[in-house]
Every structure is written in C-alpha cells, then in structure tokens.
Length: 136
Image (cartoon, rainbow, N blue to C red; front, side, top):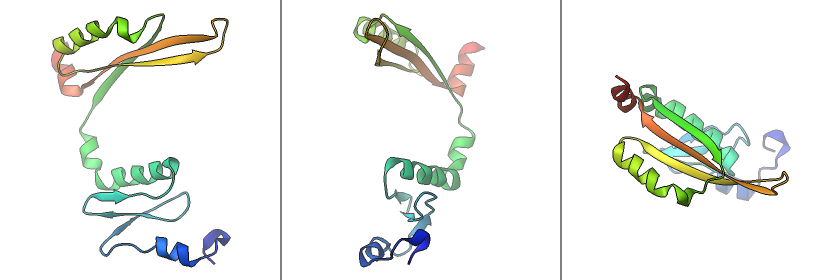
C-alpha cells in the first residue's frame, strides 16, 4: 500500500519510472511528483495540480528573474463598445507607445433585463523602467 490507502500497482510503479539525473518536483495534491532535467520541467496531472508544482519550480529555480522585475498593469472595464470599433485607436496607441503592451479582452455577461451584455476590458502593461521614464 502507498500512502492514503492507494494500492501500489504495476501501472503506478511504471509511472514512477523517472529518467536518470532527474530532480523531483514536489506535488502537494497527490504526492506523485513531477521532475526536471536541464531546465525542462514535466508536471503530471490536471491544471490545478500542475499550477502548484510550477509555482514551486518558479520559486525554487527562477526567483532571481522575478525579484528585480516590476510591471504595471492598468485595466478598465467598459460596456457598450465593441473591440472592432476601437481597433484603429488601439493600433495608434501601440505606435505612439511601443514599450507598452496594449490589450482588449471582450466578454459576455449573461443576465439582467438585457439578457446579455458585451463588456470590454481595456488595458496596458508596461515595465517599471519604461513607465518611470515617461512620468519624469
């Protein structure tokens, strides 16, 4: 028997066969680990399980990449406007501010007396240095 009363079958043993020199990635959800070889990471299971394991990989192997990076992300949700009606405007913003990542994310909200309502999340992302140079 494996932990939590799970039977250790031949199939489960085969899934535990890992490449030589693989380092294990802990799996807090099921206990069956992922593994890494040369900065390639292999995560078993469904997305929620993989998410917690990838978070561990990032925190333990790549934290230096994130400690010095700052990014601003501003967004606004508007309704009554379609993405296609402002696409030229968004392109002109991108041309004027090339260091900005400009985005629009349409969504449909159901319910209410209108039955459904189209909304648009408009936003931009910019790195700290580019933003800081603009506001000085």
